[in-house]
Length: 158
Image (tube, rainbow, N blue to C red; front, side, top):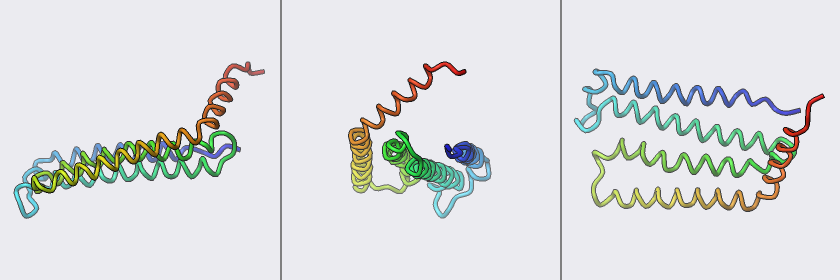
């Protein structure tokens, strides 16, 4: 019997909620004007950073849980576990770069920024390489799963 995937909707709802709340709270006048030790860091910037980091963390856990559930299943879909996780990593790593840079940019020295840039470049390239390798090593099973899905759609229901 196929496992229930309703939990995906819960994750997506909470991810969307975190993004919307972060934007709403971050744009409140009080949060825009309240500083945290320095005028460069406002409570609004901190609220958006926490919300976006939370959303990206939840996206990672969504991919991890989906990957685990696919591994526990049977059939051709188990071969999608690693490609899904690597795809989520490819989304999360460069997205976190944008979130982190918006938060630390006012404090970042010109000498340190290239190191952070290259750390995320290497991380993104690693995630992309992982995705390509995951599809390469699982391509036969992925194509078989696609073929089965296409055949099952063509069969008329009785």
